[in-house]
Amino acid sequence: MASNDDLAELFFRTTKRLRRTQAARLAPLGLTPAQARALRIIGRADEHGEQPLRMSALAEHLGIVPRSATTVVDALVAAGLVGRQADPANRRATLVTLTAAGREVLARMSQARRDAAGELFTALSDEQRRLLRDLLATLADDTSPPASR
Image (cartoon, rainbow, N blue to C red; front, side, top):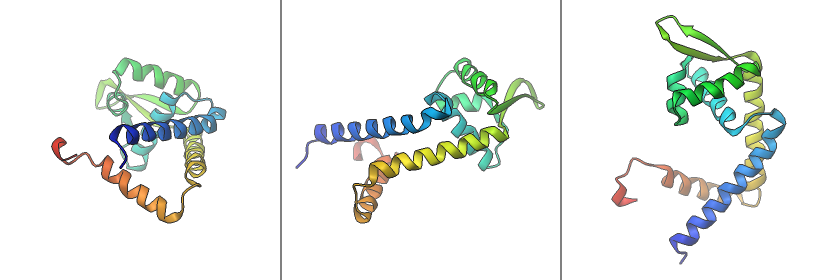
């Protein structure tokens, strides 16, 4: 039986390999990992009709302080991927939205991520992929009490 240490190490190495592969495929887009994450979050808000997204909400989703989110958004604005405007309902708040170029880059990012995942998981059969998906979904479920995990 595998020890928890072995499982944790293998899981860590696998996620590290996936991140490296994705980073290599995303490099031609010229985005940092933080910028890519922010673009995905802004894009998801757009997909769910929650656009425009407040900067404070973006910072919360990213798990960073608002000032750091401003730095990330400044770079995305400079690249023409997002627009920024004052929130008409609250002059102190700033809203961010994807531009057409941002939607195009987001689509390219999604394809790069799918390609990277395909490259990693190609070693698995369809049945192994389904089993891995089910196992990861169980591990990702954080609704159970900590003692039962």
